[in-house]
Image (cartoon, rainbow, N blue to C red; front, top):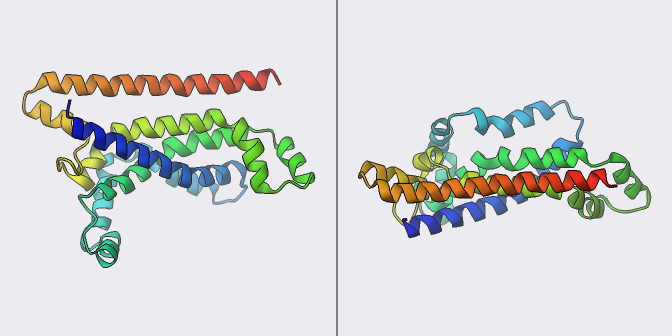
Amino acid sequence: MDLPALWLSLRLAAITTLLLFVVGVPIAYWLASTRSRFKPVVEALVALPIVLPPTVLGFFLLLSMGSNGPLGQLSEGVFGRPLAFTFEALVIASVLYSLPFAVQPIAVAFAAVDRGLIEASWTLGTSRLRTFARIMVPLSRGGLIAGGVLAFAHTLGEFGVVLMVGGNIPGVTRTLSMAIYDDVQALDYGSATLTAVFLLVVSFFALVLTYAGQGRVAAAWRTT
């Protein structure tokens, strides 16, 4: 197995998952609690990467990150270097591509919390932030676990978006999925099999953790 590609993929998945919690939890909370007429539009934008071909999303991101794109020009103006074909480009693309896998299970978990508990907390003078931290987060831990695990596993196996915005630069943008592709092209099926089995096992246990977490939360609700 390509160890540099493994380390890069794990680092990419970890950073992406952390950023998705920062970005995705507020979006999920808004989707679970709002009655805005713009909610379907936001839901569609969040879910778009699920139905949009990865190469299409990667193409538009590449245009925006290129030397003539807004993100590319911003990067060159601030950091003095282009954004496309860098690790930072992979992070941005991964956050957008894995956004629905984090937001949707968390939003469902937030929406399942008894509204009466939240309103009772407010009437007792507890702030919205403390109510969120003490009531919604504990009661939504299954959705939070599912969102984090699915986002991590999904990022770990990305191919199309990674290829478009990052290329295949060893030590910089070469992930495990790209390593499998290179091994197959080189007819090194042994190395490709080892990497593919690793990703298969990670994906399987990610789903096991997701369903187990949801089951524990459901059981907790049944006993209350």
